[in-house]
Image (spheres, helix red, strand yellow):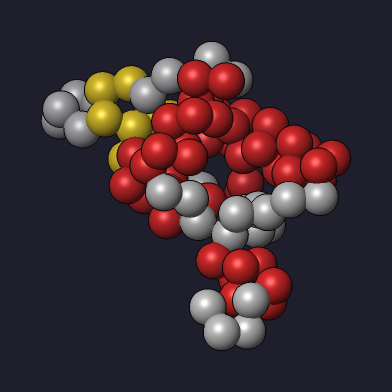
Length: 85
């Protein structure tokens, strides 16, 4: 999980934006969302995603889990572990 500057975040992120921000696919994000009971919400325009506080909370949980297990699912980390990937 990469570093995210919490001070410069938007107020709302769509599910697709969170996937790009966390470098996860939708299935991984969904699994973490269910695991940590942080559900997406609908904004006033009908977009599904997460408010800033929920993105921060989810990021923190995923970061701690990956750090504890020594795993990372980010694209950059996969490139480092597999030079032919």
